[in-house]
Length: 211
Ligand SMILES: [Zn+2]
Image 1 (cartoon, rainbow, N blue to C red):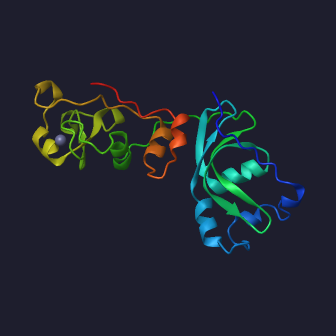
Image 2: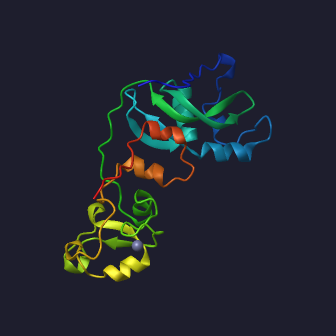
Image 3: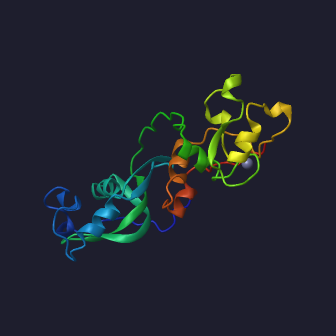
């Protein structure tokens, strides 16, 4: 995989913090008095990749920057905005890559909740394509359907009421696509309206699966 716009931070010794990383915690003096703005950038999100470019986690800009400053990660993409202190000014990282191989965490299934289902289904009713307003159990719970990613879809109220307790096999409603369990990091990114475009180069796509 190609690395575009790779940036390696190599702070000069005079740039290096002398008080640990306290200057990044938003409570020390900033050269331009932008403490509030700097704090908000620090709490925005950075995608962390393994040395193999596999996505590992989504963390705060602040924690990602600490990985970079301690030599544990390199910046792959930056985001608009800089982090400034009296000693240094660095672009905020959007994607960082670890310099060593980290054991990938055990991937549980993404937690199933309303916002996540809406994000997976792009806020569209999976029966008619109108704006989704609620969640529908494809195989109704009253008829033994489970509350799982594979059995829930975003749905408009009209279809939800119209479908009622009927089964797809009864022929009145048809799904636009088969519901699926999304990759956890992909759904976390999809729920963040401010997720940078470049993350999609590294995260598995929310895949549309034809029904
Ligand atoms: Zn509908």
